Length: 348
Image (tube, rainbow, N blue to C red; front, side, top):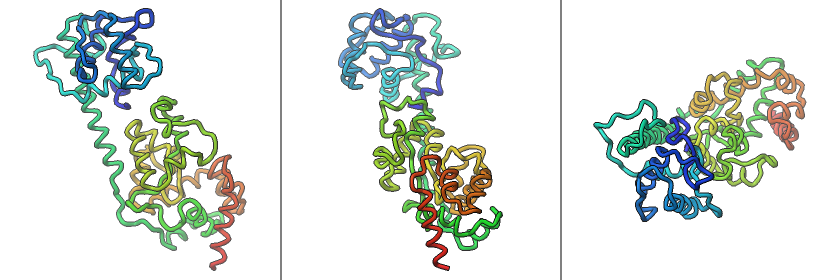
């Protein structure tokens, strides 16, 4: 859950099996209270005494085995580990009463003493903040997935002519059209839901999230093996699925998700937002959702920042075009650009 990264630690050290965990009293009491909040899942109540006994270790191990499907539970909860994150996610779903007369420590990780009410009050404040952050993320996700297209889903001949003039250097209009043809069919950079055509790249999401979702979300976060591998195919089989994939990734890490997709008529990668003239990837994505004109503008911005690409477009050097636009693992991109260009020239 991305929200946990926006809050200070609730426990300062590991809790659980003696010899493996530090079991500081306030941390232990915090975990005992969290388990008691989700008691329907556990079936028994723990004493909230700050002492790690066999019952607590058994409780942790059962939770890991039954709910997290650990083959070999270790009976330990680390401050930033999967078990703790899952426990918080479950506890957030449970409404709890605040302690209006209880003074809460200035930051969440220091309880000051082992008073049970103080620990419970601090945990409740933490969970309230979590709920607020989760709701904010939900609203942001809803806004991101909302179609904001103003109706301008197509480019005109004049748009392409002006683009060629802007790039200069004798670049053919049909070279620009060829990129659009190869990347999105050349007709529109929008799908049936009036959202930009996207393709999600899980190996990039893995890079930007530092591999933390490899186990929990193997379809979203995976190592690069080959272009358009099986995970890519599953995530991008159509635009409905591609945007479902984006929504799932966006809920985990908004910025990483947007940077890990290619966008619009020219399929520009989100991580290239600065080259396209935008300060943030959020501004980039918002602009490309509006119309095809903004998608063309982003393409022109990207091209203008690459003298090697401009030269290749001018010289009709298809290999150099493919390498500078699509990366070193460009496959048959050079031949597809050449074929698209020659087909467009043949229509003259």
